[in-house]
Length: 300
Ligand SMILES: Cc1cc2nc3c(=O)[nH]c(=O)nc-3n(C[C@H](O)[C@H](O)[C@H](O)COP(=O)(O)OP(=O)(O)OC[C@H]3O[C@@H](n4cnc5c(N)ncnc54)[C@H](O)[C@@H]3O)c2cc1C
Image 1: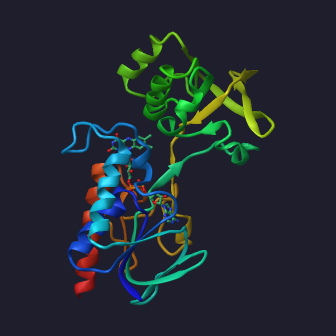
Image 2: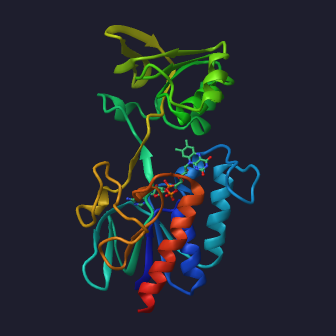
Image 3: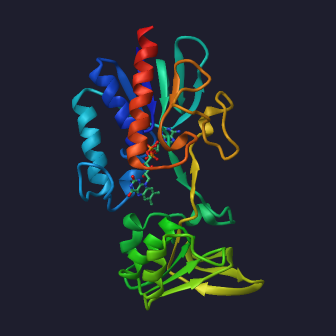
């Protein structure tokens, strides 16, 4: 079987591309390594997606998926590890399968950045988390820290102040970089402390679960006893599988001005592409453009 298009990633960009291609009568496969909906699906409340005054990310992306499912998309849960992009028939390679296709749309988004300290990998899910909407309720009445000081970190800290007993924000700069309104809200929370100029130096653990952090603040070391830590220090593009076949910028984003790449028939949409803003509406717009470009390519 040779697909008209294989879409890598089942987030808003990939699902929108699939919608346009399927409505054009194309045979489409989405390969997704985790769950439908991508990063957007873990967002508790979305208030800036037109047509919905307020909706959870998982509800919004479930609707997007139902739409393409009804149109007959093929869907596989597998991780793409390599591509062959030479020639008219291209290959998308996973651990167990090689899929053939005339076009590829990369919509693999980005994932949470980690600190890269020893133990981190093992403690993820055992005291180290990223998404307060997903894992925050486990820390009801407990002591947690949020690492980071941008919008995501501060929104999460504010939300967690209503769930946890105490929230410590660990920011490596001397100020928070989130919106001013949020700074004011956090400063008025009795159970939130902000430690500026701090660097996490070690994860402390017992019986394979996190028990605290060692931090260094202005050169002074201290230990924080904690039940959980949420890392909100930005995102990294998921582009490892490109393996030098497309141009990446220094941060690892696939270079593209308009969703086309230097390889004919290979397109990139959403958060994995070089661009200024990462939003669901933008990912959907990218998905549309990439699909229309792919249809034009297929019609040639
Ligand atoms: C905490 C947070 C809150 C946010 N809140 C909002 C908001 O309120 N409004 C808004 O508009 N935007 C918000 N955003 C941004 C928005 O979620 C993203 O811009 C959007 O999800 C990007 O869509 P995407 O399809 O490009 O990528 P993603 O949603 O990241 O989807 C990419 C998908 O590709 C999959 N994938 C990656 N690599 C592979 C591989 N090798 N093989 C197979 N599959 C792979 C991933 O598992 C993922 O499901 C928020 C982001 C975060 C982190």
